[in-house]
Image (tube, rainbow, N blue to C red; front, side, top):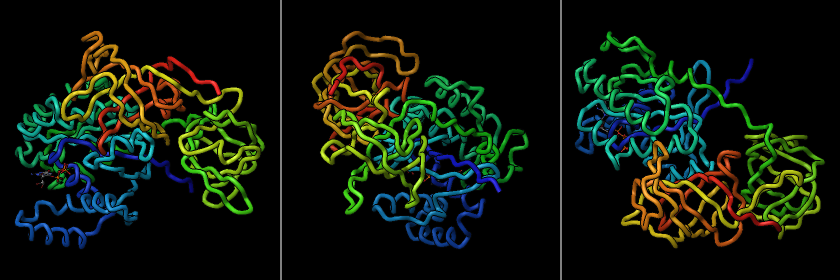
Length: 432
Ligand SMILES: Nc1nc2c(ncn2[C@@H]2O[C@H](COP(=O)(O)OP(=O)(O)OP(=O)(O)O)[C@@H](O)[C@H]2O)c(=O)[nH]1
């Protein structure tokens, strides 16, 4: 039997719009979470004095808590299966490392669901400037998540009225269009995460809705083609020294194909060598391709020439190393404003390096890209801009256009993600 393709699904939306309730109920209807677990959560929820309204949400929140504590969690909670696909639910954006994880590929999303409450006040807050629905929609688009579904939630709370759905849908449409999605590719579904309408079962409370349920819409997602035709890029995650084997770097092949016997180059050191062997899950394999997590053994490369954050490629099309580059950033979080000279830590693929935002070239409209101000003096939350960035040491990075996997980054400071960005152009290249 053929194995079903796998997709990573990210659940986004403004706080309290019902992300956890919707996905918790969805997982229960699918049979991934059993009634007994839900009953136990209902009992816990009652104890908090809020009635049992959080019983579904707790299914999801327990996952989040365990993740934050770094505990390996029951896989049944994270994964589910539809007729066509295997899905993994990835870090909900409430989790503070969500943006960084998304950018560094720790949890790359193939598709997203945006949960938007149908309750008028909640819809408006979610999509207003500073609302998380707006922020998430923008980030999803910027970071290249092409497929998105909007679930208009809490339909039970608006008496399942079509007019209420239409009003919320119109606002949602405006939002996703403004960040750059084409409306004809974005399904909108009226649901109740609380009651279970249109999640797995078609709702009888909304006869006016003739579209798909959530699970049916999930099966309309498509699997992106693997970038195997591109030059080889393997960002190094770690380098182990194993007695009797030697230096064993590990990482994920982002693009291209790696073969045993192949000549390779490690950047920024420029060290040349050859692939001796490749293995995954303790099994030796002759080749690895985009998407594979591997460990490998190198001939001719010394331990000092390869470390976390370096990138392996082939000598005829080596990974680029930037001394300085031009980027488009969006400021997500900052108590005041940032000014040129600001030096946070840049996270890009597996690399972490302090980097100075040396120049603010233009402030732009985040949706259209139109220039709104030349050489702004500062940038605050919600602002998008074209800037110049100089890592304190030359760093492997690519343009987003050529290698989206390696051309996006997060700027972090004081434990928070301050900005997300994509590389437009490498303005000063480093040659070893
Ligand atoms: N009436 C109604 N209430 C809902 C529905 N979905 C969620 N809620 C309620 O809305 C509140 C927030 O739900 P959560 O699922 O915790 O929301 P969330 O988006 O996951 O929130 P965070 O994880 O805190 O960002 C809870 O009181 C839920 O019971 C729904 O479909 N109908």
